[in-house]
Length: 257
Image 1 (tube, rainbow, N blue to C red):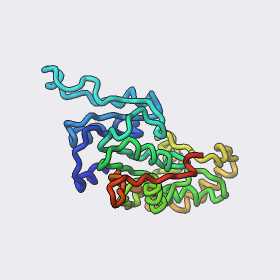
Image 2 (cartoon, helix red, strand yellow):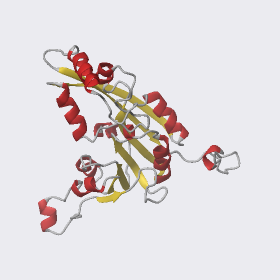
Image 3 (cartoon, rainbow, N blue to C red):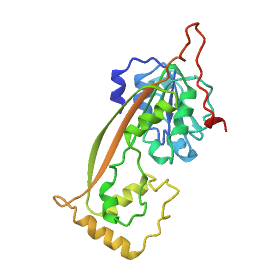
C-alpha cells in the first residue's frame, strides 16, 4: 500500500496511522516522512504496547531521535483526541472492514485532516472469503459484510472529501485445510463485526457440511481463500466559495438531529 504514496505530492507535518495495530506501517511512514510527527492510534491498548519503532542505535547513542518512537494513542476512530485540521496525512491500513458503518470514521478523518491533506486507506471488499461463505451456504452471516468499493467512494464524498480514487486487487492465499484458515483468521482478530451475526452458534452438522463443501474447492492439494483488497484515497479540499468570496458550508439537517 505504501508504494501508492509515490504518486502523490505531500509533505505532511503530522502523519496519523489510524488502526495502527502492532505498528507495521510505522517504519515505512517514518522513512518516507522523516520530518513529520508520527502518531499511531488504535482502540486496543495492548496493541499499542508493541507498536514501537525506536530510533537506530547510532541516534540513541548521540541522544538523537525520539526514544519512545511514534506517539501512540488509545482512542476510538470516530472520536479522535486530535485537533481539527491537525494532520497532513491520515493513513489507515485494513481498519474499515471491521466497522458496521465506515462513514462516521470518514467524517472524523475529514475533521482531523488539514485543508490539502490526504486520507489514504485499504480495506477488504465483498469477494473476500467468498469460498468460505459458499461452503457454509446456510444464509447466516459467518464473515463481515464487506462493502463494495463504489459505495466506499460515495461515502468519501458524503464525508466531505474531494477527488476520491478507488481500485482493488484480489489476492488468493492457500491453506492445507479449513482449520488452518480459521486459525489464521482468529489470530488476526477476525470475527464478525455485524450485529446480525449468529454469534458463532454453528452445530456440528453445519461445520461438517461446510468442511465437505470447502474440500470440493481444493486445487493442487490446497484450499483457496480469496481476499479482495480495496484501496482508496481522497483529499480534503478548501471550502467552496461564493462569488463574493464567502465560504459555502453545507448544512446537513439529518446529522444535527
